[in-house]
Length: 181
Length: 278
Image 1 (cartoon, chains in turn brown, cyan):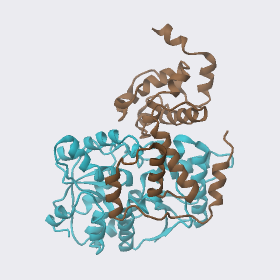
Image 2 (cartoon, chains in turn purple, brown):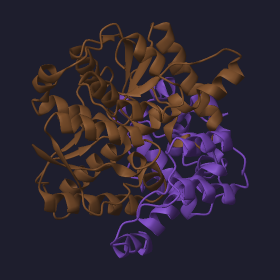
Image 3 (cartoon, chains in turn blue, cyan):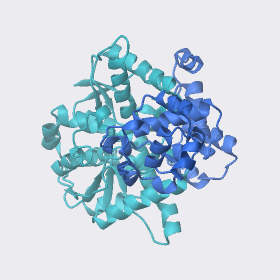
Image 4 (tube, chains in turn orange, cyan):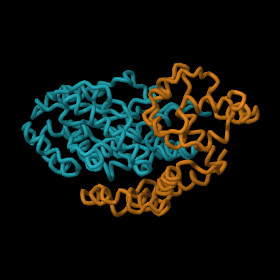
């Protein structure tokens, strides 16, 4: 079994993960991260398994996992890790890398939501919730999801028709055009 | 007392009543909230999970504005607060190692460290007596403690103390900092409903009549999803979820309280009327 797993890994990939700067090699598989993870039930690999796969250099499987997109960034894992490994930050790095390398996400909607969210910041400098929701629906085709909820929010004055904009928008535009390292 | 104020996007929209009650409470306490001029979105989860340098840049711009104001910044939204604290660490660790000339405080921290506790006690008009409430802090006010500096990150007590001071019957429970699924709000609503239902069940089990919250995403998930959860579970959930600032405002006798309460999905007015609070 271990031999088979090792076949999927390679030293070059291990170097690749080392770029994250997260000390995954300190992990001794106590599984405290997975025990406390509130969304472990919806993951294909538990956080401790991802740590193991990372240290074995199993790049493709890690980057195409559901886990990296289901992670809710609650930081329970990083807070409780006895070896002080910043597991949540590793998840950030894995998502960023998956996007950069064009790996098809196992949870399609999640990166589309983030894209819609960031679009709103790019355009207005702030989140316009109604516009962001509309943009997310356009991207996913899930037009009717949460429609009732959205309507109720609107009637309670919680969804503004018009965006609140910042005045020095150029300062935000620069951040979006910065070349990525 | 004057402080800088960073409301963030949610407090201008889906969490309007958090902003309204925060401003009302501050007014009564003699605190002038000076909104940071031309602030931008902190980027929340979406920036840091997809683009590290964008996330840093968004926070840095806000910090630069705050630095010019030179006053402590009060941040009611837990997600914004977390991003500000990360930015503070990055500024220190950066090449120019810049120390900020102001503190970044979440609202609870601010009330407790600025000596406003006594003032609250002094001007309290209606005690919250008999109101059984659990305090829910969520993730980002406390975690990761290396960023927030929270000492009691598994069992925070600031909100418990504050509402206790106003006479509420604050019930201890073990779910103060369990995640509500916040960042999956529109994408995996099934996960959000499951996590939220667990929190509601545990609050009810503890004997709470209401949940007090300190984060716009937590409050929104807990309050607005109860109808769907009830449909799925085949039993009725109707547990009011209030911002702690609304409870403080009510106790201090602010006249706008009715306006905030109308914005809730689960109507809290019956419960609050039965305690003589409205």
